[in-house]
Length: 37
Length: 521
Image 1 (cartoon, each protein chain N blue to C red):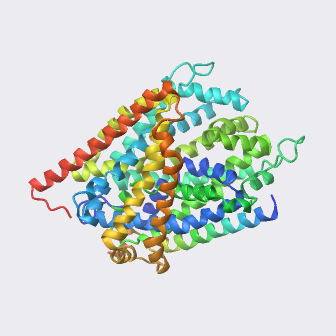
Image 2 (cartoon, helix red, strand yellow; image 1 turned 90 degrees about the vertical axis):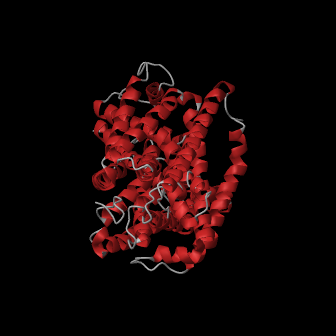
Image 3 (tube, one colour; image 1 turned 120 degrees about the vertical axis):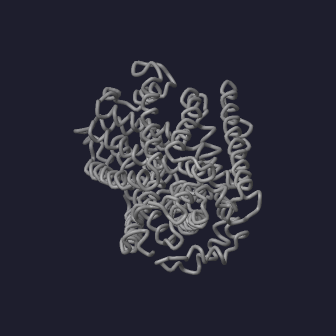
């Protein structure tokens, strides 16, 4: 794999992991669907 | 669990996200994505891919979740009722049929394909295909199983039909248990297991190194390079952009009615914005990180770059059902890893197939007041009857015809119509308010304009290009063997009959409500 490949894989994996952490921190912050009611 | 209108509801927010991710994560994540990436510019493919995710995937996911939640709070779990809630025109409910028709046609053949993965996981653990050590002999094994040819491995369709009936029964059982106790419970069990299995396979593949010491260039690093090394010249190629946006569209299972149906079991103020991002990002995790690291890199390590190119051209089934089983026969504990690979695919397919069947379930339950157990049996019977020609006439292109219209064209058309209704009839200002209701994540205002202008144009571009490029040839059966044309006509007649039946059912349901004085919201 060339340098461009490593850069792209790092960027894609990094972006996806960041997005997952952001979303699931929000989701798990609220316990249930009904907790807002 | 029930919500305000005695409709079912998701037990937990996490369960909803897993169910939505389960809907999105399917065979395409592990088979279609790596092939698409390798064939369309490698790392450079990820540029249009992520741009499409941002401009098409996530906005459309929000729109579908919002339409679903809005319709669900008015007692509609399927798109005829949802579109009627948004528009109120007598035609809206008929346009909404697409959101039941498309997933129903897909699930007719998808359940059969899912049963192949269950069968192959069984054949892996029992070692049935061990001995078929080349791609050609594995191809013969697969064709024998599918009944395309009679050979030393299979002489009839009995094994395929047995595994199909088992898969169908599992689907019907899950659907009969309802949303919270059936689909959500499945997602809570299947999704973590799916990720564990995918991680185990990913680590095994990464540990391959260079399996053949006489060909050290055939190694995992070069396998990753085959998917990721960017070819920037491909960025000016419209086909690459189309492939990337198509992949985003299908991987998130958009335009199939399933996302809206799942969202209909949300409550009025449940968070659409974060739920959409969480489901999409989980899907991307499975697709880009896991799906991109298993099949194609393994193929490069064992067959070399030239072999992997040939496999990629052969398509997803060549990769999944012919090439990987050859690899499993060459590694220690191959039966175990083969089982893991196919069972992982089975879980991915199962969580998608129940999602695809749920719009029809919701339609029967809510528009005709049929209890979920009876509705599940009814849907199961329809699937069984309609799948018989798929099973029997596979070699005549029956499945391919259903897949073109329902699996490729239908979702894009459905998504295009739903976004037009949402943005230009329901109104973008009201729509934006609905999307942001209960949101714990503030959606940047730029998405207001993306949803209003860019996403519809994007969808129109995909739809019109596909129509221009292939619809004429498909419609006129230009690439169909004349001997197979009666079967293709059979597939079209079946689709037309199902569409007409759904239209009559929608008409009857609205008439029944009118006669009994129920006001449809």
